[in-house]
Length: 81
Image 1 (spheres, rainbow, N blue to C red):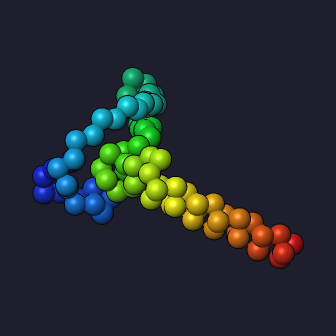
Image 2: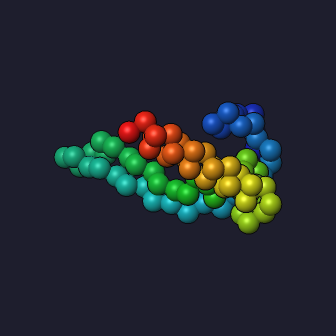
Image 3: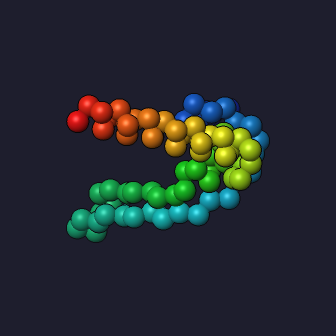
């Protein structure tokens, strides 16, 4: 992850990443009309350093904050019903 470009708002930091994914091609009359690329974005973000390492204290805190927000949102929706 280097060079002068920006990816999804992130400036290159020199990280090396290893990705696995699938490209799904839709063909029509022998021509590619659509490509869908599928990969694990969270894994990529971890490798780039944009997200804390899996299982770290910061990762657990981030997951806890997300789950707390989800619970509060569900409770608000329940009260509005």
